[in-house]
Amino acid sequence: MESKTIFLTLIGLAVVLEVVADILFKRWSLSNKNILFAVGLFIYFLGTVFWAFSLKYELLSKAGGIFTVINLIVLTLVGVLIFNENLTLLNKIGIGLGVISVVLMEL
Image 1 (cartoon, one colour):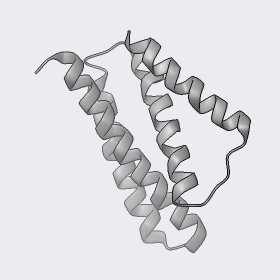
Image 2: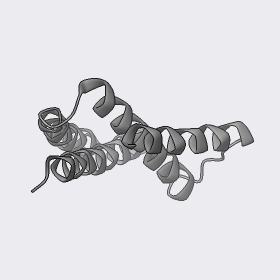
Image 3: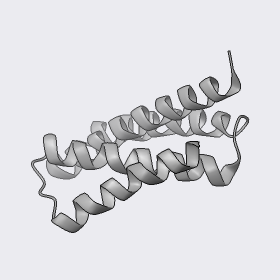
C-alpha cells in the first residue's frame, strides 16, 4: 500500500475514534454517567495510537494540520447534527477556510 494511502487511512481512523470519544464525553457531561467517560477515554487512547502511527508516514507539521482541521470539521458537523448547536456566519467561513487549508496541504 502506498504511504500516502496508509497515512490518510491512519488519520481517518484517528479522527473517527476521537470524534466518537468526544461524543461520549459530551454525553457524559450531560448525563454524568461515569461509564461514558471511561469508555470515551479508552476510545480516545485508541485514536491517539492511530495518530502516532500516522507520523511514520508524514511530517508532524503537515499531519498535525490535516488531523486538526478534519477533526474540527467533523466535530462541528456532529455538534450541529447531533447536539443541535448553531453556527454563526463566521463559524461557517472558518470551516470553509479549514477545508481549503486541507486541500492546499495535500497539493
